[in-house]
Image 1 (cartoon, rainbow, N blue to C red):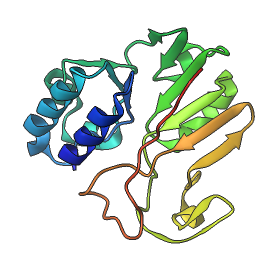
Image 2: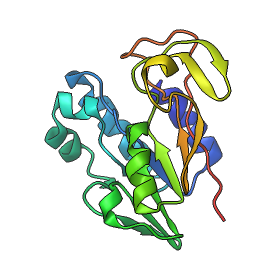
Image 3: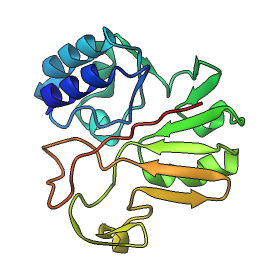
Length: 183
């Protein structure tokens, strides 16, 4: 999957790549991920937030092996007039956005006043039986914000379905990533 994603990103030539966590599912994937990050860093800067899977496989090791990544949970990134944050307490403004891992972080983003939050991927169910009113089911029966787009107070939440092929298993849940053009 990383090879296909690299080809798409090289062709698209983005200005910035934001990684929404769960960069690794299994502990032995560090070398492949590090090589991919190094390849992508030749195209544009990369910033990331960690996910629960990164913590499971060893967050300090993940961060050490990905030296080309700016970790938004450690410090916001000022980029072309935007403030990219990895935690709500880093401060919201009309020119800021929150990059989070879990979609439920939108409640804290809304309380802090972020106009936009990007979430790493759906949580709890990577299979889609049907979609209704912007919600993906059966996951929406059990997990909050299980779908691509939600408005929570002042905050627009955009949720990727993720690109992973390993865990959790995907059933009728196409891989995707968010592509934003900001002006």
